Image 1 (cartoon, helix red, strand yellow):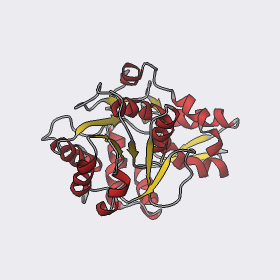
Image 2 (cartoon, rainbow, N blue to C red; image 1 turned 120 degrees about the vertical axis):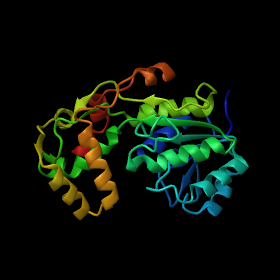
Image 3 (cartoon, one colour; image 1 turned 90 degrees about the vertical axis):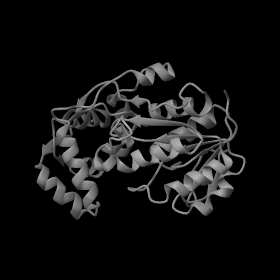
Image 4 (cartoon, one colour; image 1 turned 60 degrees about the vertical axis):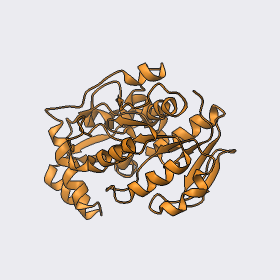
Length: 283
């Protein structure tokens, strides 16, 4: 079923931006929710609004049938009001959740995914048509190494052997567009992954290959990394949830599946492909 106008939140981010681009390329009327001026493809309508201020969303939602929802906060505070506003205008919401959310409704999941769990519950109870996408780690999170790579050629981080099936934002967008424009994923929570487990040390090496010069991974202790992240201004509750959870993945890695290919008809992109696509960000 082809949908009419679609509102994309997080439209200036990696995933939301990829959703905007894919919808626009397909000729779908797409509107981007922005808080300030943004560089968007010609023909994409930008409308000011803020998910932290539900009253600001009515104009952006006028005439919208489906919403791609990226929640930008670390708690679900205010989410109920936002979903109520969406429900007054749209019929469908596709929510970018997380693979870390517990599969059972009575399982809260890791601390860092608590807000995703609550958002999923609120959306399911809203009466809207819904899909909750559950991707594994984002390949784009490695952009956090960009400054180190540009200036020193060395990434200092914990857990060199941590292997994850990082997923390209273009693949998340391709699945999201299927959920927005067809009924194939209604009422589902697809777990979507990259095509292979790849260690952080190997990720760094592949970025080096993409930019044409060696890049080295230098492992630091988990304790040192936690203190560095706190000193850099990351919220303590975020740091103390994320890094220990990643350490647990050394022995219990995330699953790898072919859901991207099953849903979209195209195999998930490798991390090597992602690194080539983003080489300019690391040069």
